Length: 328
Image (cartoon, rainbow, N blue to C red):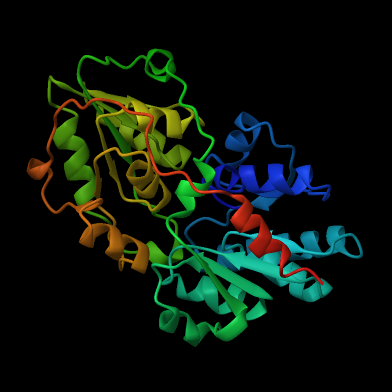
């Protein structure tokens, strides 16, 4: 697991694999809130290296180091490897000749997919991604398995929100509660600066009827947002139950992917400020009106909403069956 969303994505899959009698071991990269969320989810893990930062050279050095450590640790121990777009695992599994499943829901992370897809035994994506977009990565025919809907609809199938989340974060629930997620500013597929995010934050942070909760990806982002001293902004100090926070919010504004789609899955209005090329999943959500692109902070509709626990739920067992089909 290499990013904050991965423990949430894989939790129900791991639970079902273990319930069927399979042995599952988890490795994780120390990046953003990945380790903290694993702990919140009660998932034991083995930490393998850190993120290399924004530098390409450091990214490559960190990738090589993590791959070598995974390879030494994994030899002769496993029948199957699975990850959500992790090149570390793809390289280590290929080196050890372990069948590997590569799953993702954004098709334009070109450098990532050139490694992960080519080395994978099986590639799993939502059916909103046109298969022809994956052929340049060597994915076609039986190598590709697509599932209906959003991955978030599977891992939120058994989700029950924590109704105390706003109180625990010190949020004034009488105001319009907005969850804000900064851009992935160290990701290779999002290397251009996102000038819209600071404008959104400045706009929300000065409104008396708004309470904006920022979920930073890195310590540097946390320090930067806190230094702004915006009166309507609360900055999370570590890993939080983001799904419960989204379910309790009135609005989400995010430059990321998973948090946007979590809001969609939970029926919460959501705007995207993503600065890169939109993938098939987001294109489909925008066409259906479930995700709204934002170009001007003044266009945000800041109103209270009625919370509901009624959202689409899909069986994670389908994903488990797909994953296991790649085993020898």
